[in-house]
Image 1 (tube, rainbow, N blue to C red):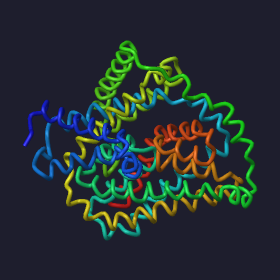
Image 2 (spheres, helix red, strand yellow):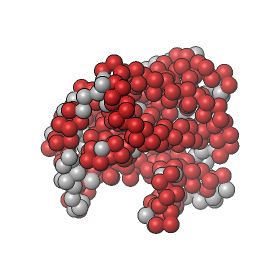
Image 3 (cartoon, one colour):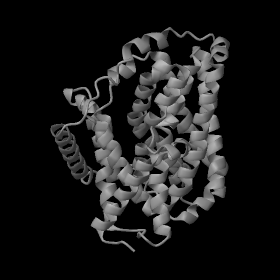
Image 4 (cartoon, rainbow, N blue to C red):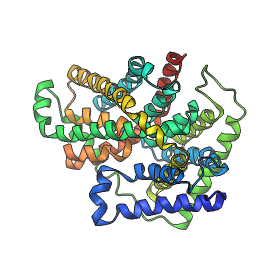
Amino acid sequence: MITEPNQLFALLAGVLAIVFWLSTLKPFKRLFEYVPPLIWAYFVPMFLTTAGITPDSSELYSWMSRFLLPLSLFLLMITVDLPAILSLGKKAIIMMLAGTLGIVIGGPIAFMVFGSFLPEDAWQGLATLSGSWIGGTANMIAIKESVGAPDDILGPIIVVDTVVGYGWVGILIFMSSIQHKFDKWVKADNKAIESANERLAEIDETRRPSTLNDLTYILGLGMVATIVAIAIGDRLPALGDPTIISSTTWAILLVVTLGLVLSWTPLRRLESAGASRVGFLALYLLLTSIGARADLAAVIEAPVYMLAGILWISIHVIILMVVAKIIRAPLFFVATGSVANVGGAASAPVVASVYHPAMAPVGLLMGISGYFLGIYAALGCAWILGQLAM
């Protein structure tokens, strides 16, 4: 068993490198389309721990959770283009908020229906899933740390996230073939889509190769923000019974809010040099350590969680469809508003481009907006679940 922290970190980093390398090889491309690197980054370390190669607890894991999560969130937040998101138009924003509302109320309803068939700490697992379904993996891990969810609960949650979440994304892609019929049914106005496309089509053209100076600024700024946020968070009181706002949560809220404030400054230009990519690297490294702490046997509990997830996503869909009919939103905004929550920034551009090939930037912006919206909304969902569990 590899227990020495430096060797253990090298092993986890090596696993992550191999996963992403394999995802670039032609024979494995289709496999990674259905099972993305994110999933492998979690499950491969879990198998290593099950096989006795890596330990299920280590001071390295604690260090990675404490520092890599706020670092990744800060770097993701400073890249957000809030003015561009607001320029999408009120229908796009309303549909995204409707999707968020569906997740926030759907989780507690699913818990009330299936809670008696789930373990005692299931509310923490569902709270963790709410983070994933309002913004993506970064928020999922943030909420997990916030509510103190045990490591082994992440196994069935990721199964549900993959099967139900990605299953719904697949349905949204399939529905692109009926978007004209849907738009006719709700009497949708597509002028907002056309104008948004004109404003946002060049969003990725500013990207450039990262220089040593760029990486120095990105890492230095991120680490300073992380350490300051942790130091302040440790001095603030825990809130909630059960605890929802812990010292870790305070640190996360501080870096997220600081990152959003700084996104209005010239520091947002660091995105053109790869700030978000460094953030994702920190996030994926953290995910390998969480997988190494997990218990493979916990996946056996996935079927009941799966039923809860299906009910949960159904509530999300119903609310989206009702709101779309009321405000006459085109199916494009329904799809991107939903996947901005459930799929996050990784899936939203893909789904958007299926509906309108030139609209990937719109999907990207809506997906990015899910990161900052998700932290606050998922904490609200976690609080409701915690109250129901008492």
